[in-house]
Image 1 (tube, rainbow, N blue to C red):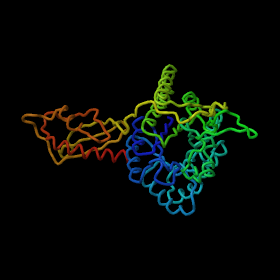
Image 2 (image 1 turned 90 degrees about the vertical axis):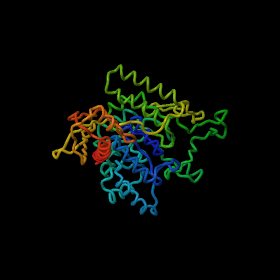
Image 3 (image 1 turned 45 degrees about the horizontal axis):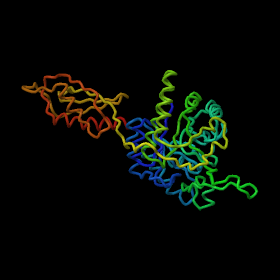
Image 4 (image 1 turned 90 degrees about the horizontal axis):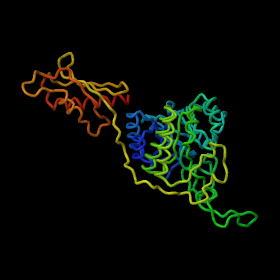
Length: 420
């Protein structure tokens, strides 16, 4: 099954991406990442993000994708070890020195080659594989046909960008910001000079009457190529946008979620999903889009020419996480006669808790299944919702306090089981 990879510039974005149906999420920490001016996540937030994501079966990748200075290697080493201890599922790397250091200090930390490595052919993928990388993020300038060929030859997963802002420079390897303003994009501080209007001259004479955004590409939108890319064998579909808010994250993830899921359904369902996804994007954002590199038809129309900023037309959506994991329960007695609660989820994780209490026949109010459902179902701010519970004997007396204690213990044990 293909992976839908969502961007996040904050912990709230992470939770929103999970809620919207992302299979994986990527973000940067407070240092060493190419989005210096995003909120980014501190160590405590990274730990919380990983824990929450893993409860919902969502992977977490952390960007460590700037070019490093020698003076930073000691701090970087400690940071990589912390990421490994948090249990992140991979780091996204541009600098080969980062990869070499990670293999040394955190050898179990998977390495993903950043798009800024400009891996544009099979030889580039083989180079990454030979150097210990477990996933390759391809250059954004490749056609769908080129991507298909690379996927057919590659023995490691292939990741491609499918939506969001696109750099004028090849795979973002731009020195313009550094030259003009001393802010390097390869150090996470791009001033985005390509988003400004310019006067185009030929032999000193203006070519156009007015200033135009001649260095700014339209946003990428790959809805029309998703089925082709899925059939080609792309493993991970990446959305750009770590500087964006919850509305962007939820809307774009939801749109591509529809298309990816419908790919495995009937042609009619595919068409309906594409229409819904396109309508969702159009109703939420006033943007100009292109997929010209994928279609191998780059031209002046790939450029925005007009102000590329666009605007958000949808109201802000509710951010955060509302999803719940369905769990099931059974109440019975253990071998010693003490009351036991067993909980399990749909992925086979199971946990039990036993109380220091032996049920006796009820004189007035027996613990029926409905009664037990009401007590065990009080899951509050846990990630769970109780789908159903069964009881071995509905004639016993069980105090609510006993069931509440069992619920708390069993829920924590189930969380520990899922995260183990």
